[in-house]
Image (cartoon, rainbow, N blue to C red; front, top):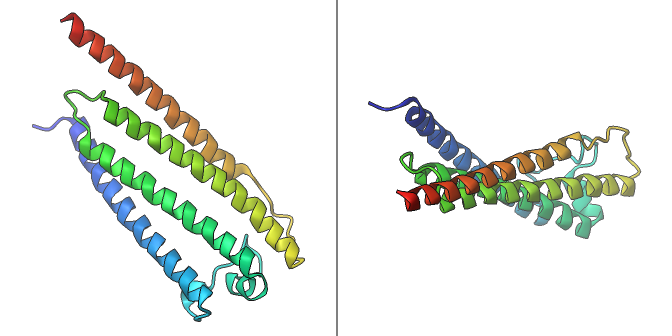
Amino acid sequence: MKTQTEKILNILRVIAWIGYICWLIAFGMIIIMAFCLFLNIDSNLTKMTIQESTITLKLLREKYLLQFIAFVGLMILETFLVVKIWEVAKNALTNINLKKPFSYSTTSMIEKISYLIFGIWLIELVSTFYGRYILTLFNDITEKFSLSTEFSYLFMSGIIYLISQIFKRGVELQEENELTV
């Protein structure tokens, strides 16, 4: 008979696989969108705006190619990091052993997730300011400018890093317990 924890972990494994596949598809779509925009192919994928403004990526590509490449590069990098988070989460949930849950591999995966989220926070921060800079190029500044979402990534990264350190301490205690027996 499965315990409640085993049932929850199985559900989380399925969710992690779904999240991984969905973000992998999103990553592919962003790559295709960037490719279509770069080659000036008109598509429904290329109708993306910058910070809820009237400026589209197509217009940015036509007027400022280097800024377009940098902005799309940030989008690709951010999506890649999200894919990596889902991949690490999927691997962590697949490799976890409930009989011995505290292991160095689990600890390192949780710590890696915190670093990846920190990387997303940095990219979000740069993207926000870079998007603001792009809007100044077009003289289309809107007053809607908030950093609240960017700091939520920083907070989440800190919490997950804290959990990884607790797991690390759990590994140390588990090893001490095995040595004393």
